[in-house]
Amino acid sequence: APLLEVSLPLYFGWFLLSSAQDKVKCMALDFVKTLDTLDAFKKHLMDFTGKAEAEVDLEHYFKAKGALHCTTKFCNYGKADGAKEYAQNPAIKDFYGSVSELSLSALFVTPRTVGARVSLTEEQLQLWPADAEKEAESAVPAAASLPPGSRAHVTLGCADGVEPVQTGLDLLEILALQQEGQQGETVEEMELGGLAYYGAGRWLLSLREPIVAPACFSSYYG
Ligand code: A2P
Image (cartoon, rainbow, N blue to C red):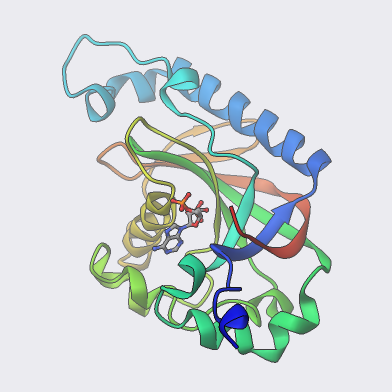
C-alpha cells in the first residue's frame, strides 16, 4: 500500500534518555573546555585555525545538533540504500521501543566534529546494519576492514557548515589509524582517561570508565 511505502523514518537509532543526555553533554563540555587549555592542544592549534598565533574557543567552535542519539540506519524516508530491508529485519520490530544501556567508551574531537564512540553489545549489534562501515569506504578507504559497529557513535557537535554524518567518518578515520598500528601520541593522562593525538587535529580520549547511557531504540521522522 502507498502509505506503507512512505512510512520509513529519516533514521533509526538509540535515543539517550533525557537524564543521560544531560550527563553526556556535561562531560563533553568539560572535555572540550579542558582540551582547549592543554599545551599539547595549543601546540597543534593550526589544525583548527589554519594559521599560527590564532586562538580557538572550542566550547563555541562546535554547535549542538539536537537530541543525542546513536544512529543505526540512516533511511532518508526510504531513499537510502537498504533502508527497506533494514526496516523489515524482525530484530528491528522486536527491539523497537526497548531501552538498553549504551556504553560510551571514548570521546573524540577533530576540526570538524566532536563525538562519543559507542561500544555495542552483541545484542545491540543485531540492530547494526551489515554495510554501515562499508558505506563509508569512499571517505575512509580502510573502513570496510573494521569490525561491525566501529562506526557507532553519538554526535555531540559539529563545526560551522559540517553535517553530522561526518562524526562517524571522523571516528572511522581514527580507528583505521589504530588498526594500522598507530596508537597515537599519548599526550596526557586526564581525569577521565588517556588522551592521544592522531595528527591533523584528531584527538581521542579513551575513557577509563565508560559512560553508561540508557537509550531507547526508536526512529526519527523529522
Ligand atoms: P550522525 O548519526 O553522525 O549524528 P541529518 O540531520 O543530516 O539529516 O542527519 C540525521 C541523522 O542521520 C544524523 O544523526 C546523522 O549523523 C545521520 N546521518 C545523516 N546522513 C547519514 C548517512 N549518509 N549515513 C549514516 N548516517 C547519516
